[in-house]
Length: 93
Image 1: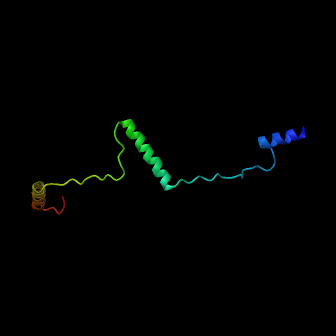
Image 2: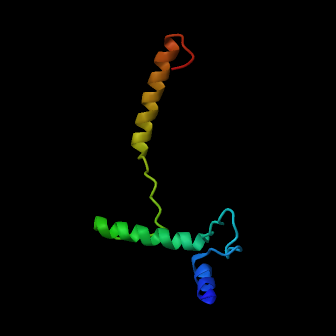
Image 3: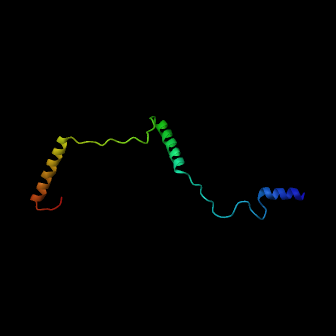
């Protein structure tokens, strides 16, 4: 009977020395590669839900270019604006 009580106490954790140390639990660290894999999988799942292909990580948006004609038109507008400001005797817009 005593053997059974001892086994029961060890199973239920009633003994004097607990198996796990008391205190704060340490957080498990995740590697950057693991985080990247999880993120890629999640992006793939969202792409599937939204009905489009998963965007690859290496895609770079092309810079938008302004034509020479548009540049000169914007420059003329800016010069006219500054001419009005200077004519009004101000030093700032």
